Image (cartoon, rainbow, N blue to C red):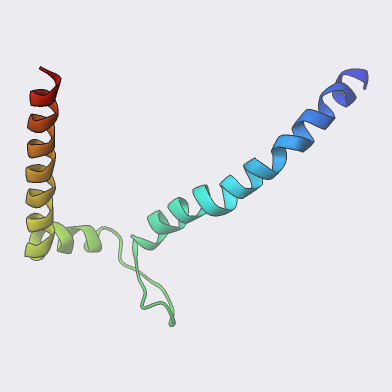
Length: 87
């Protein structure tokens, strides 16, 4: 029991960080993954749809592919500019 009490105070001091990280960091990520497999309007019941949301996103949403292209263009220009300034 002596060893446990020796480390109790430091663990108690850092525990608020881990609690806040779980509540505001890890929980939203895990819940969004859970929601991505369901159809839900935010008020009614959730309906499990599996990978249908992802299939619709990849196959039927032109805005998604436009945003992927825009992201690549922004990344490419910033990368070129960064490499130019480092020379």
